[in-house]
Image (cartoon, rainbow, N blue to C red; front, side):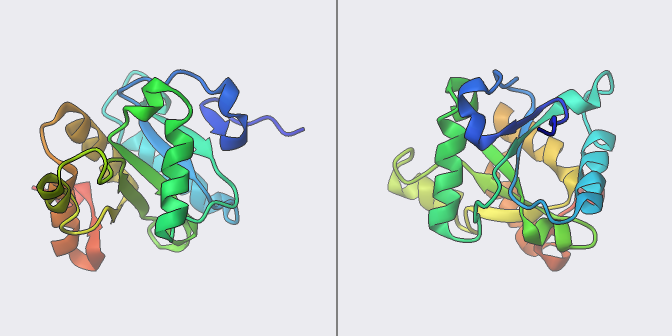
Length: 178
């Protein structure tokens, strides 16, 4: 049996999932076809980490082989699986997905997904939240900025989605922000 790197949890092993540090971004990996692309993603995540002391602790990876985040049903199932891992996981306001599109893009671009649903907000709040969709693409260098600001309430998911909507290629890139 192959050992997974530290910080990687398979969705199937939900019972043994560690507590999630609220400051650690949640990355769900659904595509396993290109290890070199995955290494580029994790290298960029560590390079852009807000915590210089332990960049690898700034995110946690959940493996979800076979998941299809490209459909609403697949996305809902993925979010339900993350939420089912426990309270610390359920509280994540945004989750990032490394799907086939993410890893085939050059450079790689992750799927940022709001975890809020119609059931969590009133109709007007939800409409504002998803004005540009419940997902958008981000360069790995944007993960920590998005995660920290959304978790702290400094900026909303919808604000980052709007920036991505207006950005070249529809991708949020922290190196272009500002």
